[in-house]
Image (cartoon, rainbow, N blue to C red; front, side, top):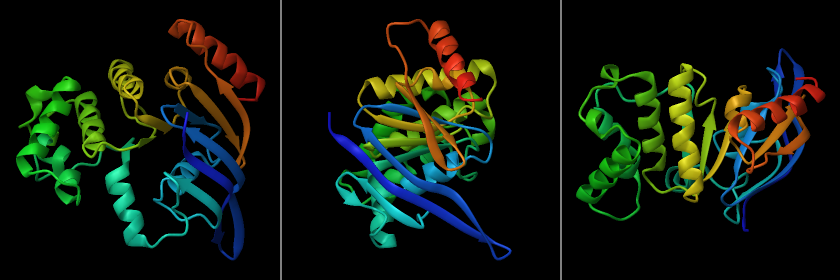
Length: 251
């Protein structure tokens, strides 16, 4: 299995009121192609900072982030923007969409901005295919305030996949959803992962994390533990075993 991301001695430091705050401290991590990795930890432990630093949304203070054989921590901003657009997908807790565009137009927007080939017709067709795959083709022409939270988050997943990324980053993708919508969204992310998309997500929900293949537990900017879930178990047993491991770490 090929390594899609390799993070070495990653540090992120902020200065607040002349005081240095070390949010990430020498993080070392490898992510293999096709993995589904959850990042968990207490509030303020550095989970989201880690996700943003390795996805190029924020620059690390030091260390290296190799993605697809490129050290993205060292390249120019415009090069990084192209990589984020063409090779990475992003799903957030807050479902950011353009209010003046309908669901389908929001989904195909990154494809229209990309320098990747294909006609507008091809890109619209891919957008429709993704909406169909995610079970929301019937709301393609709706405004973003005319759909449910679960439908909107699935549309965000479709948008994140429009340029066929190598990896999908998700920051609390189910955090703003009720239990039913949360399960629907996780079903879709698991399905995408099984089809070959690498997924890396931050979550505080052990039910969500138990559906990933690997769970990283971060405390005070350091990875303190790593847990591999057992595919042979049912969802309830996977969640129970993960909860036991988390409690042993002080969760």
